[in-house]
Amino acid sequence: MSNMTPSNITTDGQINEAVSNYRAILEKHSGEFCSESVQTVLGQPELAEEMFRIFQKRVETISSMIVRHVKVDRSRTYQQVLDATKREQYTNSDVVASMPKGEGDEIDVYFFKLGRFISDDDLEKEYTLRGLKNADTYSQSAVNETDPAFADEHPNGTHWKDANGKWCFATFLRWYGRRSVSINRGGNGWDDNWWFAGLRK
Image (cartoon, rainbow, N blue to C red):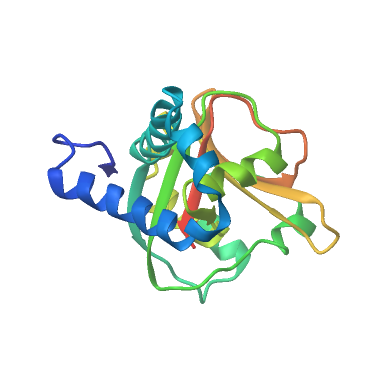
């Protein structure tokens, strides 16, 4: 398991890169603003602080993730994937049949926790903020198969829409001493305990 937490301070090179990237954007759009208005905005003392807060939020968002590298057997049937986790299964067969299969024999699966209630629609925005897409159930299952204890401390879920546009979910957790996997339709949102599984876009 890797915790994506900074081990040292921001380097001068990273600061230079951030400034260079922002300068390039300003140069690209320089013809879109009049000089007088730009000067007025530059004279507003809160501008730099607001820009920093946006940067800070994105860095803090990324640093709270856990990443697991796993091998994924995409040749399995949906049921074989669930059976391989050796968990009690609480599933809807129609929803199981809609599970995204994904691609890639080896893959990094990222987990992040929000610590608050969130709707499925807003959860999609959180994935986008982190440069992620929701994990396919094959990849998420591979993590929980490889390390059955992972969900004991990190109850984890992912979601997707079926052919009718309805939200569905897959969750792994330990409940009253029993390790379980649930596959069903959702739409009622997620409480503050969940870690969400995602993949790089």
